[in-house]
Image (cartoon, rainbow, N blue to C red; front, side, top):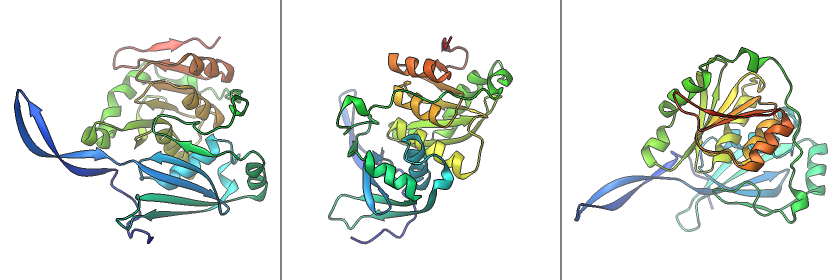
Length: 275
């Protein structure tokens, strides 16, 4: 199977559809979000296959490596190569090959598990409950939350839609945005999986050498535990979401000392006390 010549995919495909409205049928072109298997290969050994939108895969691989605890820091990754595969016969897919430091690779082999990530799940494929990592690192107090503007969350909620181009086109992608202390959206990434979108965002921050303790994440989804866990691993002080949190997300936020707010709108939000 030959690699595609393009370095990235558009994030959507165009399909012909029949629209039914008020008893009448019309034919139209519609846009559907892309969902591909993406294999993450560490030092030549495939570790995980995640279902995600085949865009920004270098950032995705870096973010996944960090938030899953495969590497401790971005400098532990020496090289990344992304390959898109589509010959019109087999299922289109992508492979991301990473070279990581030997210490990380040895640890990965020791705890290796087969992940088969579905669209809405970040831990599918683990072999036992004991493998769940529910003890987050404490988020360092860098003073960011004290500098947070009173209307920062409302501003982020107001600005997010302008950064959701694929979602507007397809109606089916999540967004993860990085916001400053004033709530201005600096970066945003989209994916069919909310945890994939967050990994892309975190990976981008690391590749750009941004300080992950000096901003907050705004997500167009519910707050599930893995989103909070991933954020805590890289020291993000606050996670805001449009929809509701789960009980485990709140518990992980409390353990990490991470501020969690949900039901974020342009004029309101709900905060979950971490004291």
